[in-house]
Image 1 (spheres, rainbow, N blue to C red):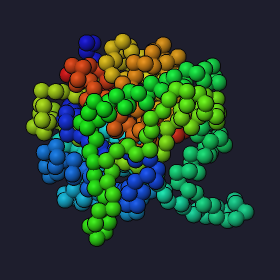
Image 2: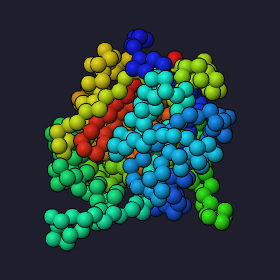
Image 3: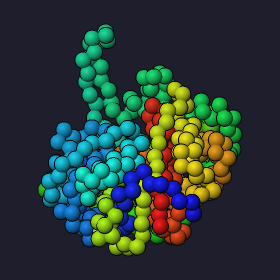
Image 4: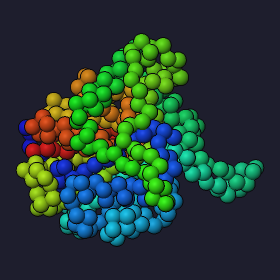
Length: 398
C-alpha cells in the first residue's frame, strides 16, 4: 500500500462508534411527523449508548443538515441537550455534500487541538419540508413562497433548469447509452439487497421507535421503506423522463440521520471496541462543473483528488458514491476509465434514498466497514451536490 501523508495527522475516526437510522422514503414512515432535529439528537444518544460511548466524552458537535426544522436557530446546544450533555457546536450545509464536509470539519477541529472528541450529527427530513414567504419587491406579487425541497429540486437559479436536467444533459455530453444505465441500476439494487440479506447493513443501521408527545408509540423506523425489488425488464419498460433518466434510474427523497465521531489517536483507541483498527483522513476536494452538468462533477472531483495524492483507482480498495442518478456512475466510469461494477458493493443512495444531510455520512460508514472486512486500504467516497458541485474524500483503514 502506498504511504500518503494525512491531511489531518492528529485526527482519527474510532472504528465502531458510528451509526445511522434507516432512511425511509418521503412520507412512508412516522419520521414524517416528528421534529427531525430532536429525533436525530435522541437517536445519537441511543447509538452512543449501544456503542458504549459515554455522551460526556464529547466536547463539541458538528451539525450537518440542509432543510429547516423547528428550533434550528438553537442548533448544537438544543440537539446536544437531547444527549443530556449541552455542547457548543457549528452548523455545516451544502446540499448532498454536507455529510462528508461535516466529518472533515470535525477532523480539522481535532487536528488543530481545539478538542479531543467531536461528534458529527447529520440529518434531514424531506417529508413536509417547510415553505418560506420572502418579501420580494421585484415581484409583481411583492412576496414569493419557496417550498424548500421541491422548489429547489425543480429550479436551479443559475440555469433555470430542474435538477433532473443536469443528468440528461451530462448523459448527452458523454454519449451514455440507456441500456447501460438500466443494467447499472439493476446491479446497484442487487448489491443493496445482497448486503442487506447478508446482515452487513445491521452493523451500521439501527431501528428506532417513534413516540408522540405523550410517549406513545406511533411507529417504527426499522427499514429503508420505499425500496422495492426491481427487474431489468421492468427498468427497460420505463418511460424516459430525460436522456437516460427514468423513475427507476434516479433516487427518491427520504428522511433520516447518521452520526460518527472524530477524535485524537489516543481517544480513538480508548473509545473503539477494536482499538487496533486505525482510520485516518487522507485528503478531500470539492470542484464545480460547468452550470447544468452536475452529473459529471463527481468524476472531476475524484480525478483532481487522485492527482493531488498520487494515488490511482488501482490503489482504492473501496469506492462508494452518492449517485442520485444512475447516469452519474456511467459518466464516472468514462472519466476515470473505471469499471462501475467494482463500485458500491454494499449499496448506495441511488437505491436507499436521498435525505441530503446524512447521505454521505452513511456512505462513509458503510465504506469503512467494507474496508475492514477486506483487511484495510484506501477508501474513496464521492458524490454530487446542488450547484454542480462534486465532492470526494479518501480515508485510510489500517
